[in-house]
Length: 195
Image 1 (cartoon, rainbow, N blue to C red):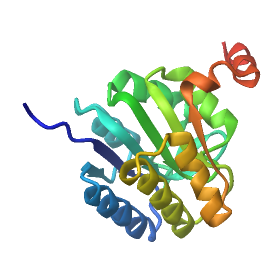
Image 2: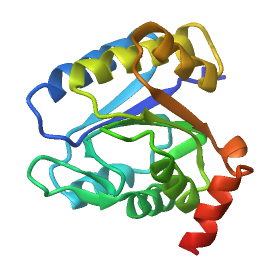
Image 3: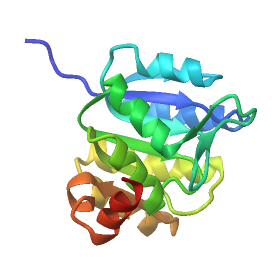
Image 4: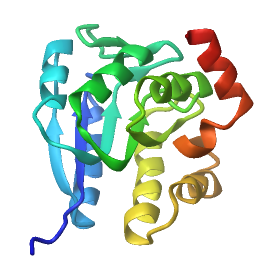
């Protein structure tokens, strides 16, 4: 019987010079923990969608990009999505395994509205992790290093693993658990407003 190997999709969709060091480090750490790494640097919306539609399902999706409450994109604006659009594309691509964790390495990727839009559009996202504030690449790097260490090396629950980031760095990250989030009043109000 073939041994199950977890996988991570790295999407380098930002365009900043220091993105290479951040993503190279995340790739090395993932390989250290035995994850199979699929590493892509899409330059356009079409290229990003092509990567997502390769017929592979991942345990983790790591998105490195510029982001805000409305959506994300790259430096040249050749990649540009609202969170609702991206959630729909993720879902239709079938690129997530059960309990997939989406890691948003972009400023403000951990805001409630961002998570609510993605969870609303894609029922396949089990967990979503991102920063509540604007950060630079080295802050993203250390934060996701702590998260992956706790998830993969220590087998800590995703919510608790995310809490370890603030304990170690004073940087505010949040992990949204679909099952918990869907029962919260704020999420229900957001869904009612969007539908």
